[in-house]
Image 1: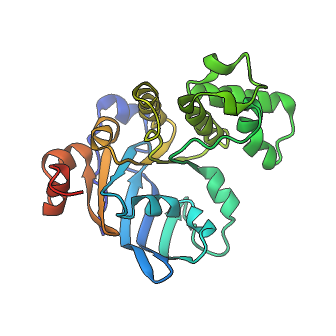
Image 2: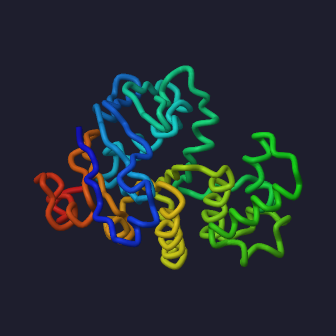
Length: 271
């Protein structure tokens, strides 16, 4: 099994965070099949709490498929079959006894392209809490404001909360989708290339958010941009042809990889 190495901890972090070294989510012997094609091949790895882990690798290597497995989004794909275990808060989320909607409440996801609902900005963020039974107007207003502030969008939209979310720019829409995920108060945030469709300024804002998020959440991000992975992640995992080749601290992966395939990819020799 490939496990993440324990990060170096500063004195301040050691005093302020009792969960250092704790695991937020763990995959064990995870395999994913699309019909007869095996997209993920018995991957095992652990994701530390309050850290950012980047999944890198060439197109089609399985990193997005693996990410979607972590909150059972692959359930929505016809012909997809998942084997193995994913442990979160002491339970295997692949168990048939697990409530998938409760899993997705605690393991939120943001996709590659912004996908706001054709509703107002307010209704986009309030949608999840409302669907889970929250009816108190003041509570919903608090959730919306808090989530938009966490997504660094509040100041830009506070005077037009009841206008269409579709009128926002692409970068604003993506931050709205992040706020929508945060409104459910997740423990883990899955980001599937969240900045790949955005301009450099919007990308910078998303990266700043991700760096801030690890104070409150465990973040797992798929990125095709190795410079981005190096900038924002504490850990990096390299996937190739459905296999996890190597995982470790980001600086180690980028400066002293242990596997030749990792070194070849990092140095641009393939992919």
